[in-house]
Amino acid sequence: MSDTSFLTWPFFEDRHREWAEELDAWCNDNLSKHSNETDTDAECINLVRALGKAGFLQPTAGDAIDVRTLCLARETLARHHGLADFAFAMQGLGTGAISLFGTDEQKKWLEKTRAGDTISAFALTEPASGSDVANITTEAIRDGDDYILNGEKTWISNGGIADLYTVFARTGDAPGAKGLSVFLVEADRAGFDIRDRLHTMSPHPLARIGFKNVRIPATNRIGESGQGFKIAMSVLDVFRSTVGAAALGFARRALDETLSRCQNRELFGGPLADLQMVQGHIAEMALDVDAAALLVYRAAWTKDQGAARVSREAAMAKLYATDRAQSVIDKAVQLHGGDGVRKGHIVESLYREIRALRIYEGASDVQKIVIARSALSSG
Image (cartoon, rainbow, N blue to C red; front, top):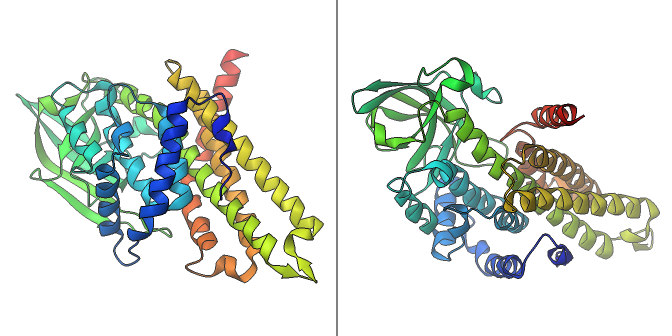
């Protein structure tokens, strides 16, 4: 049984506690039914459908996004099932620009994504522009009442299974970051194609996608022309803390598994947990979990209180939670011995799952830059 005493912290209201308990119960009853080791795409689609049908995708989009609920959802889902967390998170990230800046007509998509009927994707990264968003080269050229889109995106989560892509492209309004705009692109548009499926050590639907003379109506543009960078940063400001929450969920599961292992595994005539060095590792793991939780939920609470930007708080939460989760899970592998590296063991799975979180939505080194610049500007 995982420790849930953090739910009594003053960051949360009763509705958050009830939400976390309901989702946890649903996970216990349902997630084992959605495991398909041979077809990640099918499993992810089934998870989106199941989460939508159960009503658990409702908080991912809308006029008022509650970041604490998103974080609780990601922590809970990650603790139970890594791909379920991914399925939930991408429905929010993929539609974040619509929630924050979309027109009433564009927001009609949210009914479908929250129901799990439409799968969404966030298409920002390019081969030469990951953390450097201002270096995007994909172009959207105005042609009467339309835009014509040309370019390529890579490492796109849900690439290959998404029905709707939020695509960032250069519209030539100004150089660098000021010349970007954002568009909704339906997957069935002529000229849109999946150029490559990308396979990682922890399987997720990922792809390199391309646009060749893709014609989309100007009404598919989200926000004003030239607002793309602002929109991207606003979306990441909301969802970056949730990456830390997912890492927290992975770390919490690793700690749970380690506590059980050390209390039940005998070594030198007694439980592994009796060894002082083992107790030292467990103490460090528990400390890292609680410290990460404090940073994650501080960032979420701050945003929910109406802060315009939480770049510093979100960067701290993501950096610390993902880095320390890596350490917690590494200790879990060590304390599980040979089982820790046995394929199919939960700890081995967590070891593969956690690594990508230190890269996507702003790599750890980029988060350090954000934090340092914030500290220097306030000094």
